[in-house]
Amino acid sequence: MAIILGVDPGSRITGYGIVRTEGRHIHYLDSGCIRLGEKPLAERLQIIFHSLATLIGEYRPQEFAIEQVFMARNPDSALKLGQARGAAIVSAANSGLPVSEYSARQVKQAVVGKGGADKSQVQHMVQVLLGLSRKPQADAADALAIAMCHAHMSQSLIRVAASAGPSGAAPARGRVRGGRIR
Image (tube, rainbow, N blue to C red; front, side, top):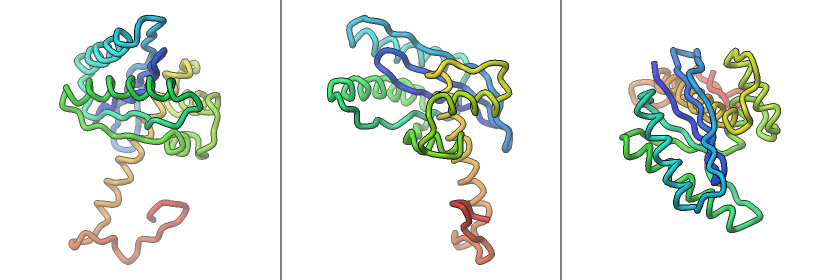
Protein backbone atom coordinates (compact mmCIF):
# COMPACT_ATOMS: atom_id res chain seq x y z
CA MET A 1 0.00 0.00 0.00
CA ALA A 2 1.28 3.45 -0.89
CA ILE A 3 -0.12 6.96 -0.82
CA ILE A 4 0.88 9.10 -3.78
CA LEU A 5 0.64 12.89 -4.06
CA GLY A 6 0.41 14.06 -7.67
CA VAL A 7 0.91 17.72 -8.56
CA ASP A 8 0.04 19.69 -11.69
CA PRO A 9 2.10 22.85 -11.12
CA GLY A 10 1.04 26.29 -12.22
CA SER A 11 1.86 29.86 -11.27
CA ARG A 12 -1.86 30.78 -11.03
CA ILE A 13 -3.45 27.42 -10.14
CA THR A 14 -1.62 24.35 -8.85
CA GLY A 15 -3.65 21.15 -8.87
CA TYR A 16 -3.10 18.32 -6.42
CA GLY A 17 -4.41 14.77 -6.28
CA ILE A 18 -3.90 12.16 -3.61
CA VAL A 19 -4.48 8.45 -4.20
CA ARG A 20 -3.82 5.25 -2.29
CA THR A 21 -2.71 2.11 -4.08
CA GLU A 22 -3.44 -1.40 -2.90
CA GLY A 23 -1.93 -3.85 -5.34
CA ARG A 24 -3.32 -2.91 -8.74
CA HIS A 25 -6.21 -0.93 -7.25
CA ILE A 26 -6.10 2.84 -6.97
CA HIS A 27 -8.38 4.62 -4.49
CA TYR A 28 -9.21 8.33 -4.43
CA LEU A 29 -8.35 10.19 -1.22
CA ASP A 30 -8.46 13.90 -2.05
CA SER A 31 -7.90 16.48 -4.76
CA GLY A 32 -8.21 20.17 -5.30
CA CYS A 33 -6.61 23.36 -6.48
CA ILE A 34 -4.30 25.82 -4.80
CA ARG A 35 -5.54 29.11 -6.24
CA LEU A 36 -2.80 31.71 -6.22
CA GLY A 37 -4.49 34.78 -7.70
CA GLU A 38 -2.64 37.95 -8.61
CA LYS A 39 -0.20 38.09 -5.70
CA PRO A 40 3.49 38.76 -6.38
CA LEU A 41 5.31 35.66 -7.65
CA ALA A 42 7.35 35.18 -4.46
CA GLU A 43 4.14 35.01 -2.39
CA ARG A 44 2.56 32.53 -4.83
CA LEU A 45 5.61 30.26 -4.61
CA GLN A 46 5.49 30.43 -0.82
CA ILE A 47 1.79 29.45 -0.89
CA ILE A 48 2.55 26.44 -3.13
CA PHE A 49 5.35 25.33 -0.81
CA HIS A 50 3.34 25.68 2.41
CA SER A 51 0.08 24.28 0.99
CA LEU A 52 1.81 21.14 -0.23
CA ALA A 53 3.72 20.82 3.06
CA THR A 54 0.36 20.92 4.86
CA LEU A 55 -1.08 18.22 2.56
CA ILE A 56 2.03 16.10 3.07
CA GLY A 57 1.68 16.46 6.83
CA GLU A 58 -2.00 15.53 6.73
CA TYR A 59 -1.92 12.56 4.31
CA ARG A 60 1.65 11.28 4.85
CA PRO A 61 2.27 10.20 1.24
CA GLN A 62 5.21 7.92 0.55
CA GLU A 63 5.66 9.11 -3.03
CA PHE A 64 5.43 12.38 -4.94
CA ALA A 65 4.84 12.76 -8.69
CA ILE A 66 4.86 15.95 -10.72
CA GLU A 67 4.44 16.89 -14.36
CA GLN A 68 7.60 17.83 -16.23
CA VAL A 69 7.90 21.32 -17.60
CA PHE A 70 7.02 21.74 -21.26
CA MET A 71 8.18 24.43 -23.63
CA ALA A 72 5.67 27.23 -23.75
CA ARG A 73 5.42 29.88 -26.43
CA ASN A 74 5.96 32.58 -23.83
CA PRO A 75 9.38 32.33 -22.12
CA ASP A 76 8.13 34.32 -19.10
CA SER A 77 5.30 31.80 -18.56
CA ALA A 78 7.74 28.89 -18.87
CA LEU A 79 10.03 30.46 -16.24
CA LYS A 80 7.13 31.01 -13.82
CA LEU A 81 5.95 27.43 -14.35
CA GLY A 82 9.47 26.20 -13.64
CA GLN A 83 9.56 28.20 -10.43
CA ALA A 84 6.17 26.79 -9.35
CA ARG A 85 7.51 23.27 -10.02
CA GLY A 86 10.59 24.11 -7.98
CA ALA A 87 8.53 25.24 -4.99
CA ALA A 88 6.49 22.02 -5.17
CA ILE A 89 9.55 19.79 -5.53
CA VAL A 90 11.35 21.47 -2.62
CA SER A 91 8.25 20.98 -0.45
CA ALA A 92 8.31 17.25 -1.24
CA ALA A 93 12.10 16.96 -0.85
CA ASN A 94 11.94 18.81 2.48
CA SER A 95 9.60 16.06 3.69
CA GLY A 96 11.94 13.31 2.49
CA LEU A 97 9.68 12.18 -0.37
CA PRO A 98 11.16 10.68 -3.53
CA VAL A 99 10.21 12.84 -6.52
CA SER A 100 9.16 11.31 -9.85
CA GLU A 101 8.54 13.36 -12.97
CA TYR A 102 6.36 12.50 -15.97
CA SER A 103 5.73 14.22 -19.28
CA ALA A 104 2.18 15.27 -20.15
CA ARG A 105 2.26 12.66 -22.93
CA GLN A 106 3.19 9.85 -20.47
CA VAL A 107 0.37 10.88 -18.13
CA LYS A 108 -2.24 10.98 -20.88
CA GLN A 109 -1.04 7.64 -22.27
CA ALA A 110 -1.30 6.00 -18.84
CA VAL A 111 -4.78 7.31 -18.03
CA VAL A 112 -6.54 7.77 -21.37
CA GLY A 113 -4.58 5.38 -23.58
CA LYS A 114 -3.36 8.01 -26.02
CA GLY A 115 -0.69 10.64 -25.49
CA GLY A 116 -2.54 13.31 -27.45
CA ALA A 117 -5.71 13.28 -25.29
CA ASP A 118 -7.30 16.61 -24.39
CA LYS A 119 -8.17 17.86 -20.91
CA SER A 120 -11.81 16.79 -21.07
CA GLN A 121 -10.79 13.21 -21.93
CA VAL A 122 -8.39 13.18 -18.96
CA GLN A 123 -11.14 14.50 -16.67
CA HIS A 124 -13.58 11.85 -17.89
CA MET A 125 -11.16 8.94 -17.49
CA VAL A 126 -10.06 10.10 -14.03
CA GLN A 127 -13.73 10.23 -13.00
CA VAL A 128 -14.40 6.75 -14.42
CA LEU A 129 -11.23 5.05 -13.18
CA LEU A 130 -11.54 6.44 -9.65
CA GLY A 131 -15.33 5.99 -9.47
CA LEU A 132 -16.00 9.66 -8.71
CA SER A 133 -19.57 10.97 -8.76
CA ARG A 134 -18.55 14.00 -10.85
CA LYS A 135 -15.65 15.25 -12.93
CA PRO A 136 -12.92 16.91 -10.89
CA GLN A 137 -11.83 20.43 -11.85
CA ALA A 138 -9.34 20.28 -14.77
CA ASP A 139 -6.17 21.03 -12.75
CA ALA A 140 -7.17 18.59 -9.99
CA ALA A 141 -7.96 15.94 -12.63
CA ASP A 142 -4.52 16.46 -14.17
CA ALA A 143 -2.89 16.04 -10.74
CA LEU A 144 -4.88 12.85 -10.07
CA ALA A 145 -3.84 11.60 -13.52
CA ILE A 146 -0.19 12.27 -12.62
CA ALA A 147 -0.58 10.27 -9.39
CA MET A 148 -2.30 7.45 -11.31
CA CYS A 149 0.45 7.46 -13.96
CA HIS A 150 3.02 7.10 -11.18
CA ALA A 151 1.07 4.22 -9.66
CA HIS A 152 0.96 2.44 -13.05
CA MET A 153 4.66 3.04 -13.71
CA SER A 154 5.58 1.79 -10.23
CA GLN A 155 3.47 -1.36 -10.71
CA SER A 156 5.12 -1.98 -14.09
CA LEU A 157 8.58 -1.70 -12.56
CA ILE A 158 7.61 -4.07 -9.74
CA ARG A 159 6.32 -6.63 -12.25
CA VAL A 160 9.48 -6.37 -14.37
CA ALA A 161 11.71 -6.73 -11.30
CA ALA A 162 9.69 -9.72 -10.07
CA SER A 163 9.95 -11.46 -13.44
CA ALA A 164 13.71 -10.85 -13.73
CA GLY A 165 15.95 -13.83 -13.24
CA PRO A 166 18.72 -14.05 -10.64
CA SER A 167 21.11 -12.19 -12.96
CA GLY A 168 18.61 -9.33 -13.19
CA ALA A 169 17.82 -10.07 -16.84
CA ALA A 170 14.27 -10.59 -17.98
CA PRO A 171 13.39 -14.27 -18.42
CA ALA A 172 13.44 -15.73 -21.91
CA ARG A 173 9.66 -16.30 -21.84
CA GLY A 174 8.93 -12.53 -21.52
CA ARG A 175 7.88 -10.78 -24.71
CA VAL A 176 7.29 -7.13 -25.32
CA ARG A 177 3.87 -6.58 -26.84
CA GLY A 178 2.21 -3.19 -27.07
CA GLY A 179 4.96 -1.63 -24.94
CA ARG A 180 4.41 -4.13 -22.12
CA ILE A 181 6.34 -7.19 -21.05
CA ARG A 182 4.13 -10.26 -21.14
